[in-house]
Amino acid sequence: MTADARSTDLFLEMLAAERAAAPNTLAAYTADLTSCEESLAARGESLLDATAAGLADWMADMGRSGQSRRTVARRLSCIRQFYLFLLREGMRQDNPAAHLDAPRPEASLPHFLSESEVVALIDACAVSRDASEAKQRRGLVARAALELLYASGLRISELLALPREALAGERQMLVVRGKGGRERLVPLSDSAREAAQALHALDAQKGSPYLFPGRDPKRPLTRQAFDKILYEVGLQAGLDPARLSPHVLRHSFATHLLAHGADLRALQMLLGHADIATTQIYTHVQTERLKQAVESYHPLASEQAGRTEKTG
Image (cartoon, rainbow, N blue to C red):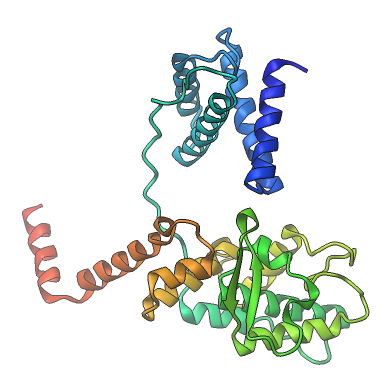
């Protein structure tokens, strides 16, 4: 094993042991380290002996190859953590990534559905009583999943990992294990609980440990399988499937709560954000909506638009 390989393995082991990093996170970090290592190798450097100039060239390469600012910022975050780890473990005496500048994040607001569109989506899960058993179950899976995603703001990974007994009895709260193994409590709406319990009763004979079992009852429903269900329900509801994703439902949950007066700190807890700065993006959504409302309906705004057109 090379010195670079050993240092990256130790770094990933630390992330898994000390920060409870998920497999997907570790895979992303591995790809980030590999990208940096390959760029450095083209300049005769390695991860262990990298210079600040070599790392700066790697970042420039990413920009020239058209990678998004979000991707570049994420990869830089990984490399910064890596060299801090090497410094802490005495594997380097300096930090070549200390003065690298992250690109400014792209100004993008989360996409979300209107309240009426969410209702239409959930209503589209209904299946006629004379439909086949497979179609009826598919409808129950769709309804239970959409109700829980929208009523509780769950991530799709959190939803599909829910144990079968998560909604047993008359529980009013759901225990969710989120990123980094952190647990949080989220309230359940009556309709979400009823939909999940209906699915729970239908799958009683499968013996699966999951609330949403896959074809193999020992494993949960896959993300790809859920995406197909969401696609079909979207078509049935008359919505463009391109606008739909589990995260859009999570954004809709947060945006609608805030629009109805929810406290930002409470919203942070419900979403499981470690930093409230992540939650504050939804205040920008509300600000943009207020701005659009003023521009559309305020009489002075329309007069200003008319004067602009004349002077133009």
